[in-house]
Image 1: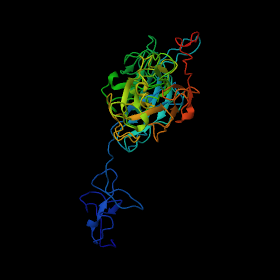
Image 2: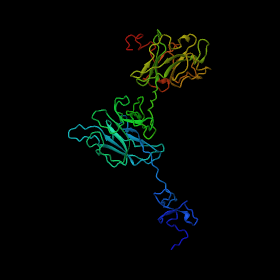
Image 3: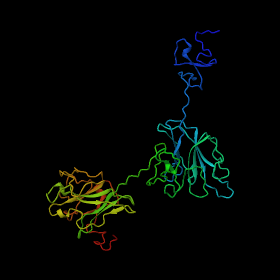
Image 4: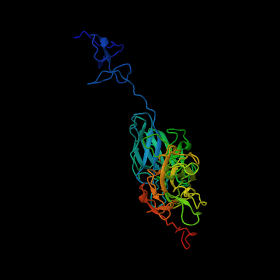
Length: 457
């Protein structure tokens, strides 16, 4: 007996068995007929699925995920901080928890009575879900990997455990493979003849022209896989930039490391004039030791109270251009003693007490005699550089200008106010962008052997 006008017979939908479950498809449709209903079956894409307390829906077969790729790793970081990780790349927002990363030791144990460790699983790391960009990385952790010889295997369906011996006879071939599929692999070796690896892609100390085993490596371009060592670029593993190394970018796109910015240097000392011969003028730069400052230039700029005297004085004009070189092991570079009259406004002293500004700039693109203050108001109207790094000015204090192209202004020698003198930062390298950083040098040339016999120089 049937007590409903809507009867789902074995063949109501072309089938041959009595339906044990059914759903209204579309959800909530009710026309009082068998056509409202679709048989439930989890294995048939043409039928509905069980959705208790949820909207009715048709069965959709699972989408097969593209296997992940071992994309970057850091096994041993000798710089500051604990930076050891493994990164995989794959589909975006994909669950890769079925995969595991295992690290297999390849170093032989030479201690008598100790079982060799070659082929032993040192580390097992479960993978997780990728982010919106397709990356999953383990969190930073220190000292869980060995640096010398390690093989990394990315496997599906791992059923083994840390400590398992996968190479029972230590011949370099895996005798035990507790996984359903090997999806990616790479090895790092110290290059010793006794070391064993379990991958066709082996990064030895010299694979890229280096001399030490890479502490880590990245696929560059990102996620490139040709099953060759050329896919891999060694990572920065000591915190010190080296040309050609990859940056540590766990969970982000792989990229080459960028060089650190050149640390700023400063004008540390200058001699523009002193009693006697003018053959000992110089400018000194202080910065980081053994650093290339060739992008920097010292400019000598005319001051002359911002009163233009045609043919004699024109404030803002570039009077001297001095390229900077590399500092020594103590951080110093200097021009050496320049020819007499190279620096300072000595030639104009008989007309008006003069002055100069020394400007240390980066990326200079101007020219000698170029006028940078076209209206002589003490403000640069033309700036042929990418930035000013440091500056100091010196000149007569008889008629103080409102601006001297610098916040650090050192008055001329009181006993002869028409000439520019010399000064040093005391303490050495102190820079607060004020005149207080500077101490007047001896006007008679103390410290210069030729002017001060017996001086250590």
